[in-house]
Image (cartoon, rainbow, N blue to C red; front, side):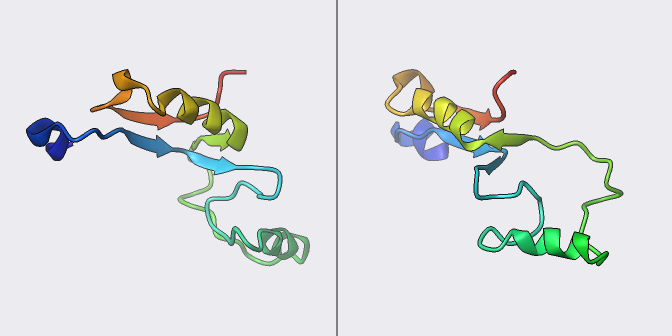
Length: 91
């Protein structure tokens, strides 16, 4: 943003939430390549990592919903010099 302010460098910041698709299990800790390992641990009664006390709220975004928001920013001159958080679409 400093380069944008000082030199008019075209920048748009996009901050996605945890984004997932059909091949991912939306977990905050685990392996994107092998997400089934967490499910396997659950089935075997093994411990899994949960942030905080397990009651915190966080946002999941389906990959197609993220894409809609992201595509709306690409090439959009109104988006230059701005920062966006892309989260789930309203159902």
